[in-house]
Amino acid sequence: MAFILFLLAGLAEIGGGYLIWLWLREGKSFYLGILGGLALALYGVIATFQNFPTFGRVYAAYGGVFIILSILWGWGIDRKTPDLYDWLGGAICIVGVMVILFAPRQ
Image (cartoon, rainbow, N blue to C red):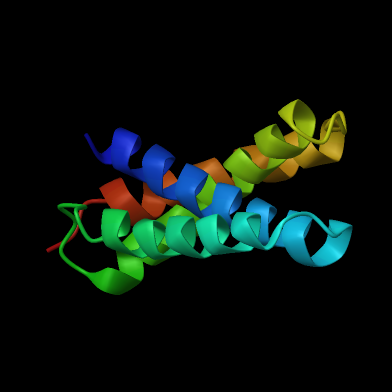
């Protein structure tokens, strides 16, 4: 369930930011900006459904997931093929996410 929530939150944040980018940077419809703002608000709500006990850990771990989703978004939507260093950096981030979320604690 945690993975699905991270995925949904990431898509809401990246998608919302992308819609605002289209509105402000590419002169698209104001309504895309409104939809983007709503998606960003939805991101903030989705993230609160995580079962991990602390805000800081959830958001720190989400940062790593966001990096991977951003690489994939750039590849799929913007058609910018990730290079070796994009993938290497993403892999390092995912390892960091696993340490933050699943390391044994007292």
